Image (tube, rainbow, N blue to C red; front, top):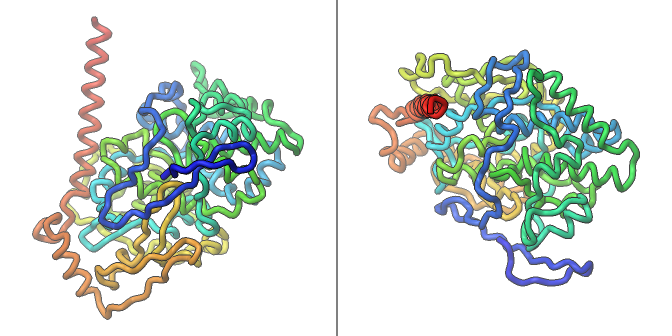
Length: 467
């Protein structure tokens, strides 16, 4: 939360100390006041993107909102000079920025959200608790999960930093938001809309050339400003995306020293951001909330809940693991899975070539531990003990990020105690046979509601056209 005591930091800037309130496990989501305005459609949302070779034909309009960020960021990344891409590689963003777009499976994400328990920050399934872990984030996204926590001083206004480091203005005097259109224009891609008859390949080539023409090719202060602008877009749109059109520059103080950017655990911040968003009302987490954290969640489900059959493995062996998958659209949304139980794959990464994923090796000291996850004003617990099936329902004492948490070790000789306690605690949420009450049911219901809503919208448009 933003502190109430201000002071001068020596450079004429007013700042406030940030005080963090760790949320107990029986509380709901963070209640930090948001500066973001209500979500509004982006002008590029209405553009019809041409399908790529690995994409189903005819993406729905609802999918374009989250995909747009990937396309624009990827085009700018390709337009950066070689020395800038090398800097991003050293910062640890290279594998993430080389990821391909993945169409969000909104129905799956919303169905999973229905099984989220905000009291213990885990999903509830018939076979126990499950959550994405730091290992999942590292393997799926390629973002580093080791290093310093993503936190720091919260300022009452970011106007001075935005002008000095970005050459941009915030949306209003006391704000941490910059306008997306102004940020994109500063990177050379002001016109990010598809042109009539323009295919995806031509569209990406045009954006890349526009970015290349606008970005400096010489090292120096101008190049540093270009890189900060790009990182604000990457972090504020893809990694820690805000609701609505403007983009948060709250991470800007961490980008002032570009040589220190590689020391932060951006993947851990993404996981904290995901946990916090899962704790919000399901009505607030629509398509507008489908950023990289939600896409990572759906790939996590592809690996750990394969019986749902929601993804298609298209590129075996590619890393990070998000590159391997394509969303399988609902041709028969009910299929055969409605008559079977959800099968869980607890150890999907056995046999992976970790040598090809150095970001996994670096993050290994943080795997398998109870720890607090940080994303600026949000601090949430990662209860690894609760997802270890043979450990019982009791929770460990969490430790700070700097201490690398507390390693989880088994204190039980079998699963029996865990399942007995789990059934007592959550039995009312499952049917008498012990099957999940609604993951498949909610998934199919969500798909049906989406299709019904699309039908209603189509009918209303036809009536308006006739009128």
